[in-house]
Length: 280
Image (cartoon, rainbow, N blue to C red; front, side):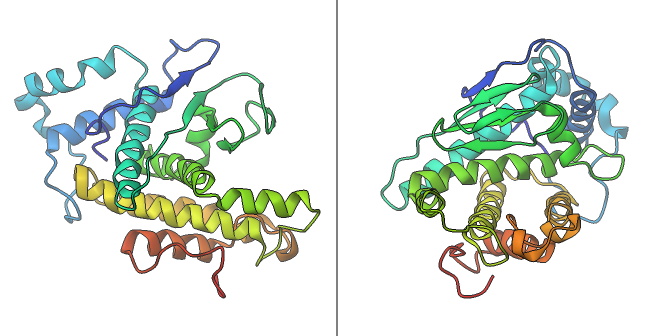
């Protein structure tokens, strides 16, 4: 994934206790980006590997010019800023097509227990979360890397998918979909279960993440072979059925459903109408 192409977001609030420490994942992201730049960007969906470092020597000057701003900072934070920046561009354009303005969320990076209107986030325990009243996404970078881990490699697009999923919840909040679900919860209605509102909202977020992925590829031409499969692998891994959850307590949908709805958004075969859809 050539993740340095979008304009970095200015809406990342780094609240980490020591935000000058570079994570192991950040170092891997750095190496992956350098190899990708060296290999060139015209490799989308080609069969050959896009991460061959051989061309680096002949393009060192070009790489230094492109990458030095990232090397001087935390590469993992720079990655998050780039992905969030892409969502701001894409959703601004997509909503403008429907005559609506997009107000982006703030993405908070944290590494200690953090209080939100939605409750306390425990570092090392809780994964990425969107809090509608705050209109903020909260991410612990170590948790993000673990959640999107693919084998022993750095899974850049898998992490991008997770971020895009949380941004999709913000889009749902702006559209009023999350309020319907919160109102039902406030009335004491059950929103869990395999056909519940919680599952429907999460699958819609997967679908919207797929729509972002398609539009972002068309705009930035930044995907490399295997990137989409990274996202699908994580979607499968995060299915409720993979974690021994009873269908009556599903909150996010099955592995098959999560893959299906991401693909639906990416392939533009639907309008992400999971809230009112008869079948999921």
